[in-house]
Image (cartoon, rainbow, N blue to C red; front, side, top):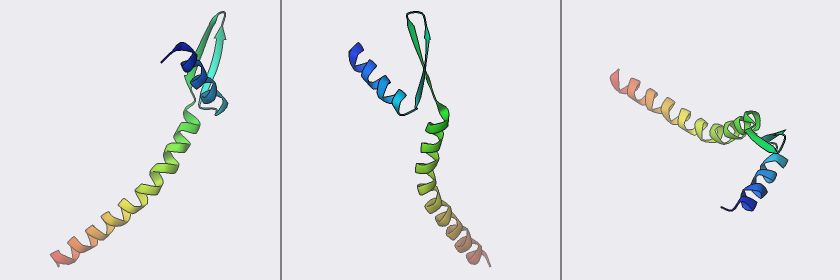
Length: 68
């Protein structure tokens, strides 16, 4: 990637509040903002997690039923 392309991507991430920027003289330091990244992860993971928990619960019930 070119430096200009990286700069464009960082601006987009900063506008989306996924990256925070701190200037030190000529340097511009970028840091990940963990809060929105965590929220995005939770929103996507929860969707798939629910189905897995239901499937595991059903498997547990079937195995316990078989052991009786």
